[in-house]
Amino acid sequence: MKAVITRLGYCPECFKKGSPKADQPFAVFGDTSKEFFVKFAKSGRCHKGFTPHFFLKVGISTDSKQVFYKKLCCMHGCGTDCYREGSTIVIELNQEKWSKILSMNIRDWNALVFYRDESMKI
View 1 (cartoon, one colour):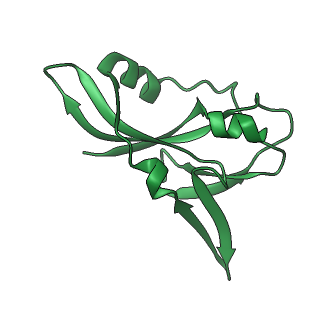
View 2 (cartoon, rainbow, N blue to C red; view 1 turned 135 degrees about the horizontal axis):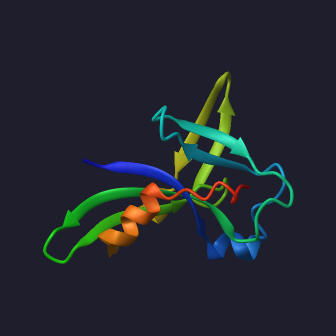
């Protein structure tokens, strides 16, 4: 089963751009609702370059105890484009940036999934 979560991560492209910036839109995936939403960054809430990211689990190797996943920055203009079409909010994912498969050990993946630092907000 594939799982999508939204967690804070470091993005070198956003660091170069000075993101997150006040009122900059970003996409999130709701843990409970299982829907995508657009939110807006608040001024001074997070360090430059630390932005929300989507993590998509694509597989597990029980032999090597590795989780394979894809990661994408959620900031508008980086990994996503968020815009309005009439009364509908559209979130487009940058498929090129979303295509690379990464890996981490299962223990680290479980920590990422189950630990939420509520003090880190943008």
